[in-house]
Image (tube, rainbow, N blue to C red; front, side):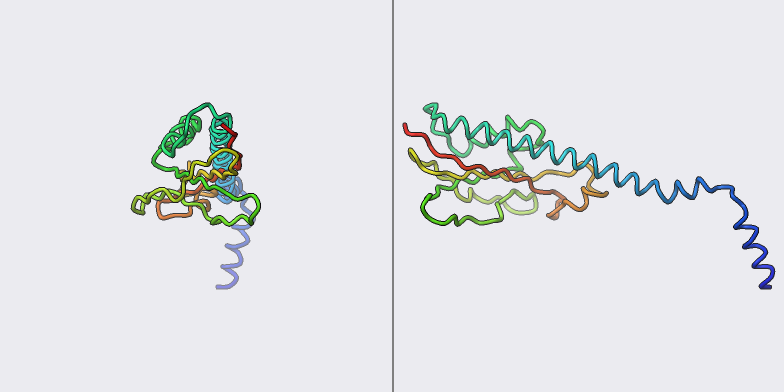
Length: 178
């Protein structure tokens, strides 16, 4: 019986048919995960760059002091119009503007508030329009749906029950004198 098993095993090991299929079956899933993760990373980087750019352009408008006293909804609309790659930006982004004393230690919460579809709507956390020469911090946090939520990087990025991840853009500026 053992001789029969050894003979079958030897015959099986000498047969090279299907070698490429075995290699393909082993390596294809790994290559697909790597490729999908690369595409996901490219889109995360693109969306984060667009959010940062939109926040910087909007803060530039505030700093120039064009005579407009921006309110929360105005800033959010302007940022969302400029962040073109972020879908449902109005529903998935929260803004926080904090007036800071430049002579005291910075004391802001390290975890920004972001929207979450599973939670009830929360009011604006903190939004203070500063006066002339005030040091201000503007933080925008947007929740983004991964492109490939079930594989690779998209699965690892998800940080809430809806499978979204947070992109945060923070900037500091001084209100110009009026």
